[in-house]
Image 1 (cartoon, helix red, strand yellow):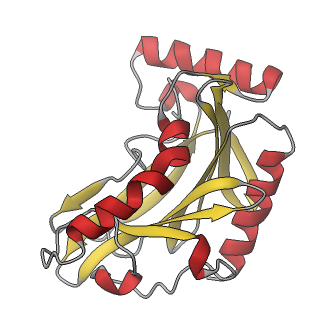
Image 2 (cartoon, rainbow, N blue to C red):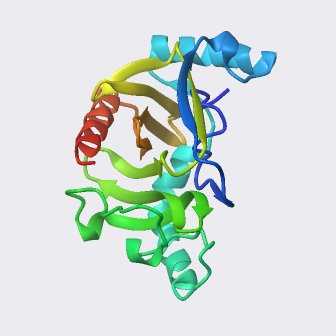
Image 3 (cartoon, one colour):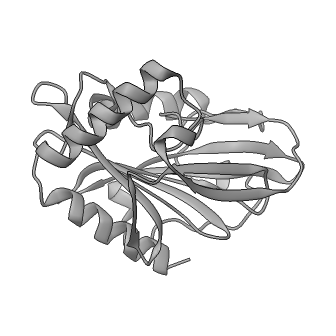
Length: 229
């Protein structure tokens, strides 16, 4: 199963719920046998994990990498079409953070210049005070086209199970999972997920080429982002 290092979280590109939920959360590190998967899913996950260890990436025809690589061309028309929307539940791309009602303070990724920002979109859950998450899509000269998804775990019920086979503590010694998937035709998606007491974060970067060193660069960028919180 592709991108199965956490369950029912961060479904790409934008996962949202407009409802109110009780505030409880937890992070569990569990064996693959205790992940919420069917037997076929579990078998595929084991194959994916092995391929990731042996090749450095999972061969996949997923469109996720291609979606990010193409989003720069698609974003302007979407932003223009919905720029006047006053609907607080609107999940389309926006040009500015100020156009999104957020339930927490977010000022953007430090160091990303305006000309490299492609757009912002709400994610997570809409509660009385606004959205509990935000996605920032941007370009980076080294990494490719990236999206950072941040969700405030203190505002919602967010129970996370992380596969112990995929676990590391690469981002500031916090529970982290990493993955690369794709193929030469569609490109490759480099993903870093990490979580802390307050935030759950996912940094995805798509690049046309596979480079074993690129994942380490994405991890280093995630580390820098985490230190800015």
